[in-house]
Amino acid sequence: VTKIGVLTSGGDAPGMNAAIRAVVRTGIYYGLEVFGIMRGYNGMLEDDIIPMNSRSVANIIQRGGTILKTARSKDFFETEGRKKAYANLKKYGIDGLVIIGGDGSFRGAQKFANEFDIPCIGIPGTIDKDMAGTDYTIGFDTAVNTAVEAIDKIRDTMDAHDRLFIVEVMGRDAGYIALHSGIATGAENILIPETKTDIEALIHSLTEKEKRKKLVNLIVVAEGEEFGGAEEIAKVIKERVPNADTRVCILGHIQRGGAPSCHDRLVASHMGYYAVESLLIGRHNVMVGVINNKIHYTPLDMAVKERQAIGQEWMKIVKILAS
Ligand code: ATP
Image 1 (cartoon, rainbow, N blue to C red):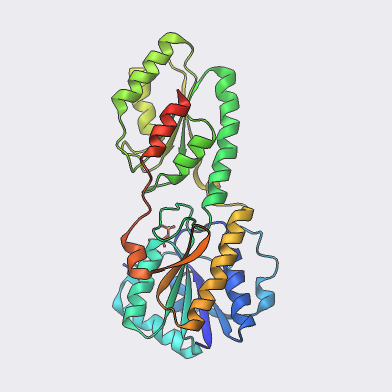
Image 2: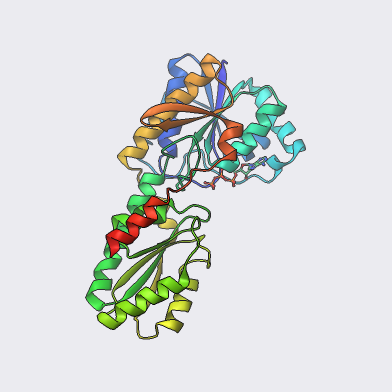
């Protein structure tokens, strides 16, 4: 490997810039030429590829988003599209790729690596954290801390007015942001896609609580929860517990942005370094992860097959601590 390309793909996540910086600087340290590929796989298809040097990644470690921009590329799903992408890479002599993104991006990378002789290394960059083969994904720590900060503020109003608040956090398929931010803010209920929502039990506990005292209650909901998120849950509660002063707050995209936390910057730097090292020593088509504080490599095809499950004991802990 002598010339490598780096790209960010799928949803952006805080810390992606720190990973780009680590890949570029490690590559240059080892005498490689490094190219930045703009807007995910679109940059490969449309020949939007730029040479990078150590200065191109100066002063970005603290910035959210991604300087390479990111996108979802329809054409990369097609064989024709990937052929075109390969031809463009060849023009520059690029013979190795680092892909920073989520499982969709790795699915694309795996296909590409199987079809053409371009080794691909994945770095998990997603706020959802649900990827197999790693304890951390870049962006999760920042996103969850943003959620905690916001929920703390909501709790002040909730307590002052004796309200029932339903806060929706991100997570279409994964409940990690809801689980972690809910536990950290002392939420009474946490509803996530991985577990069936027992609406009857929820209504029952709210009704009982209301009988005893004013109904002050925090429910943290992941957007992909069974009933369809905070608005849907609120509808049921307003109907069945009409005396509660029920409010909904959807945190939305604030969870994606902002300066990455120290932890995300460290993880990104660590993974970025090892992604380049992997290309150099011929450990190809793997995702770089961290398990028990050690770097861990998972073949891309395995990384996209499995997801990191949420231990059911956590839901028990939520119940005990909120009672
Ligand atoms: P996140 O879930 O955090 O948004 P992601 O990487 O899972 O990130 P996706 O939108 O699923 O995001 O995938 C990003 C891009 O990867 C797609 O737009 C497409 O270009 C490529 N890709 C995904 N799946 C495939 C596939 N099966 N074959 C080819 N390319 C794919």
